[in-house]
Image (cartoon, rainbow, N blue to C red; front, side, top):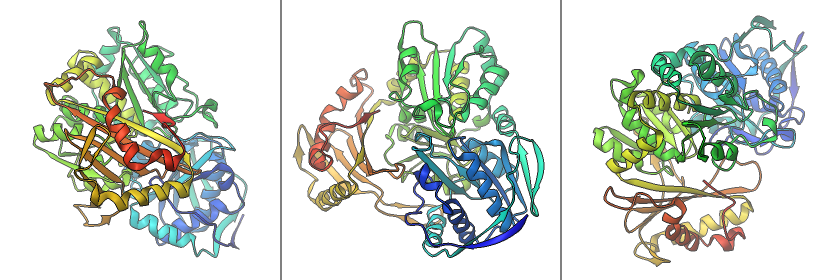
Length: 543
């Protein structure tokens, strides 16, 4: 075993996005690619000499091989300890919890989240800081700067470690500790929720299905929902993690989890159903015959969290990403607590959580979480829903209908235009931004614009400013359209169009969602010239 320093040249495009660096798997497999990026991360954080790191991922293709590379680079750079999930597996929220619980200096999480896995699909790698959350923009900017000038990296020439054997191993002078990926996370969930109440609910005949989508949450869900809470065997489906997610798309939404949706919409479907994504940080919630949008889920959880042990003292505040509907704003107003609108990306919640300004956070892209970790957490959201259902002893549908009758309903949908020509997508945004000042008062289709802007955010904790975070267009009656280019795709550009319409408590609360949003969708498409720039007459995916 010997330490070596190898010369290298920068790889183009190693710029971390909203959730780290994402590329096609074959790009990450290029010789030296992982090494140069990891070395750039270490250079950007003033090295890892004597530090402790958490390392793990969602088990997708190339996960184990990349972890071996990361450990060699960490050991060669003088890291003291690496805490690694057995077989290289750690859900993203479990990794965040481990960083916090073990007082680690940071962590490297391997995942492309909800993107497909396989040698011809997607891979990702991100750095989380010592609070357990994603690196803020200042750190990711420093990492990108290092990737543009890196000239050498350090590694070890050594055999692979046994990632299956629990306990400690040595890699050079670094200790590698292999841990049960579920144990510490399950312990945290017991502290937050009334497992006895949920166990009684299930024992009383309440039925559920959880679709792990052949991804990392499978072992967590089986251990907690089936083994500990008593859900019958088979309640957790697609529970074994697979390198290609069973050749599926591990995105928990009605499109990619359609079999689960069809089941819960059938006459003999379960009382409750849920799904999580590739790395376990997203969730989908359904009740018998009804789908809960992520925006509504955040609002319902905010209104009911006080019923659960971990949040019995009430909420300090709530935060949502800008594209997320304003449903939770109405709850915050009624509770008399703060409500914050941030850019897309969980990293923007970190300062608010650390400062005690908020307790619950959520994004329209199926991410929900709290101050228990610094990441969104799919299984946590499922358990919070189950605990609330156990306390209220009503159905998911009844909870939603009661919520709408109390606060009104924010009809909401996201329309995705995928793999759009990147130059055309950018030209569309540039054109629309130039026309924003003239939109107020303009009538397009059946809607009148009341205001339009490009969203900028000033962090209320550290004062940092994030500009160019998406276009917002408001309409008479409380409707809204948002357009932004996503940072989670790996080819072309993904244009996301978010549509929202508010119906007050005395309005029509039972319209089909796409019908309720039809006028706003057509108006936004017209204002943005979407057909002209995308070449599409309709989105690829509507959720």
